[in-house]
Image: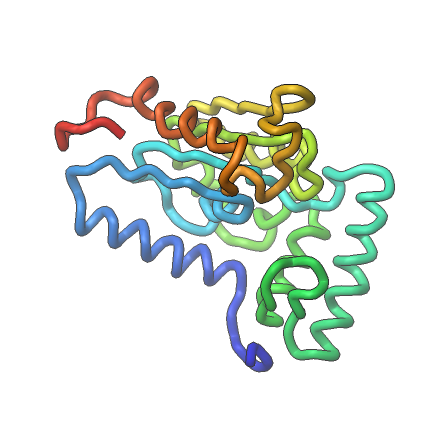
Amino acid sequence: SLRGLRATMTEWGAKDFAGVLAWAAAEHPDLPRIVVGHSFGGQAFGLADGSGLTAAVHVAAQSGYLGHWSGLARARLTLLWYVTVPLLVKVFGYLPHWLGIGEDLPAGVALEWGRWCRSRGYLVPHVEGATERYRAYRGPLLSWSFEDDGYAPRPSVEALLARFEHAEVEHRHLEGEALPGGRVGHFGFFRTGPTEALWERTVSWPDSRLPPCPCGAGF
């Protein structure tokens, strides 16, 4: 049970994400290190030092501040983060997956996530050194976003990218007929089918932005 489990979003980034980066650098110092971050995976740069990475790919990675949404979507998020999430966490001791988040979340994760989403700067005002860590990454950054993604509308994606002041950002926003199969959404990029064409474009992208791999093989 997640009831009583102590965990936070900050810990996931500052410990788990940072630990993987440190392991990769220690075990494979001569190989390029490329991160593919979906949603929170792109935000995590503000929680861990990614300055040693070779390149980064964002898929539907965004700032979660609810002000980046508009109309009915913003109203729903306001209700979610101010009322629904705190109430459910108080009742169950964690946030149940049936709210539509995919998996059960520990109370600390859900409540911290809510605090970030209610804040104009998202995680930055709450995490010491976050601004500097975003600025520290100076490599190429490919960001995918999709018009039909209700979890990551274009303004929220652009708000996150603005934090990477020194990165070589390439933002590919797909809409209308450019959406493979007519629909991608927040999770469709990783499903088999029409979106596989995006995988090929993603895998080939580092070859056009980086020098040849010292290991003697392409990316």
